Amino acid sequence: MFEQIRNKYLYNKTQIVVLDKKGIVLQSDDLLFTLQKQTLISDFHPFFETIISLIDLEYNEFTFSCIHIGYQGVEKTIDIIFNSGSNIENPFLIFVDFTEHYNNFQSIAQEKNESVLSFHLAEIKNQQLQSEKNFKNKFLANVSHDLVTPMWGFKVFLSYLEKTELTESQLEYVNLLKDTNNHITHLVQDLIDLAKIESGQMKVVNEKFSLSEGIKSLIAVIKPKVEEKNLEFKVAIEDNITDELIGDKIRLNQILINLLDNSIKFTKKGTITFEINVKDSDSDFLTLQFLVKDTGIGMVVAQKSDVFQSFKKLHNSKKIEGLGLGLSIVSTLVELMDGQIDYQTKEGEGTTFELVIPFEIAQ
Image 1 (cartoon, helix red, strand yellow):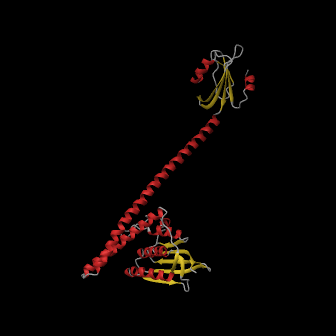
Image 2: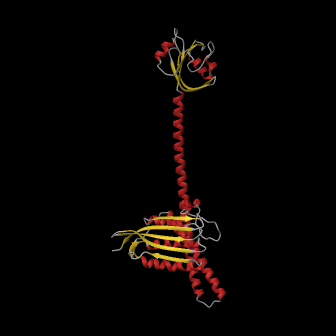
Image 3: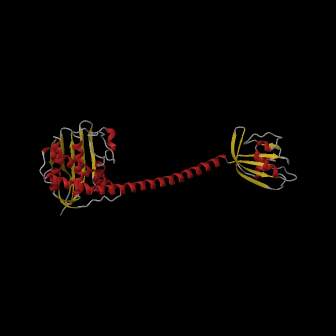
């Protein structure tokens, strides 16, 4: 009978079990499970109580899919085909082993569910981050602009106060207030720039400008700061550089002041060096190399990856002021100007920043 059944049901990994009309196991090839003969099939597993109730329905065949059975240490997920037999044929069961198939299907379904879930979680997280970012940018922009007006008013008031008759100590207090006001104004401007950068509103404006006049103004701003710390200030500009260029002179000035201020801030003694060299040129374009060197405290290797990150202060000394935004803003401005920025540093010996920016030559 086994051969007849097996020829009819051409399945791999199958077990055939022949029953009598009461559900007692008469024969089994035990290819999947080892069944005890002359015992009720329901003793093998409670599921087969259902099978016994179907035996009286002659000439009927039933298929039960994805039945998980554990017996004597063997775990299988099987499809069960039950044929209720006839007056001259015994009922029989066919166990078809689909364990591997169902496990693979379950694994794929689980991976798909996890993938879909991960996608939706990532989407929700991105929406939340974007919402937080928009709120932060709006907050920074509003608060910063609200601070600018009174700071400028305070600056004007100090300029008037400075022109009155003051004692030496009073003049010293006014100068201290001016320095504090300038510092706060600089921080506020950094916050405004950060809000513009993160909201995509920071733009460069390319227009004709004089390089020599821009550098002259830059040196006029930087020189007093260098002298205040008793540092040496060296300026080296390559001869015969084309003067009339097209670019964003305001952003160039902002970048260079940030780099020079940074060098002054971290240098207690020694020299600040500012150089301008021609990197490349043709009849239409000029690429300039700006170098800012100092003999300051330098950086350790572990800090190098943090240099251009927002709100990253590389030195936590309370004597060193700032929010840690300057170089982050510089990096973004350089990128907007199609330039490149790099640096070399050694702890205790100083840092050199190299800025390379292309300009169109004004015709």
